[in-house]
Length: 370
Image (cartoon, rainbow, N blue to C red):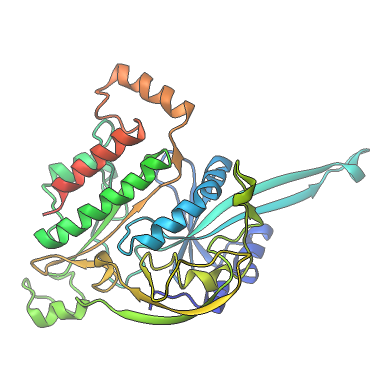
């Protein structure tokens, strides 16, 4: 099931286990991984490996709140979306009293913003190679001394290694079509700098779980699934995924309230990235009458084989999804594009207008899949 149990979610990332520990500076229940990117963000994995937490900037925090309704609608209407599944958006405010003559009326407030996401690599299978693919080529090559299975290689590395995501023409068409829809949505939100995160597990050879053979037969491949699962979930929908006090934008009529019961709604919405309501109408938003209904959850095509996608020759298992979708093409990025365009090929610079970014991203993906 793609549903998330409310109690299980709280045990992983709830106030008792996570938020309180973060305030107290005790992160012993988490595995910390420093960001490999330039953002300076930090990643934390929950002890059970189900969820990943990432610190975000105030700008990213405001962007996600602004686009939440559109993001929810896209996830709801695209059962096979590859977009990262956001499960929570939080802000921690830590107040520290200052010492001195003005101490009674002087306090220092520090805010920490972070998102909770489903862990795309939450799998018992070893990830032998991983790539972060944007479709650009300027600065998109990993130095040889940085090569490591835990480090995500880049676009130029992918091409030099003659890598190919071998899924067959039918599944390629479905994946590429969905990526085009996802990138069109991101372009409509003026978002750039996203990428396809790809993890590859090689089934054949000594590294294959429980096997030392160089070939893979049908019985062995069947251990990885290959069929979709449909789960019917009875859900009472009274709140949406992100836990926050409110969502504001320029139209006051669009304000929505979010309660701490968010994970209950997630099981019917964002967590699967694949929701098909059996009844008429869409998911009810906060403030509307509560309703109990049956929702059919079906694994998207890229998650049907042990949470991944088996290659056509049944020798590789792919784990993939679109990540880093919170970078707006704002004034700073416009200036960055113009400056870098003077020094490098403007077509190959990662920072570019949203429509151009989406077109280049899709062109690369059409060549990457086979």
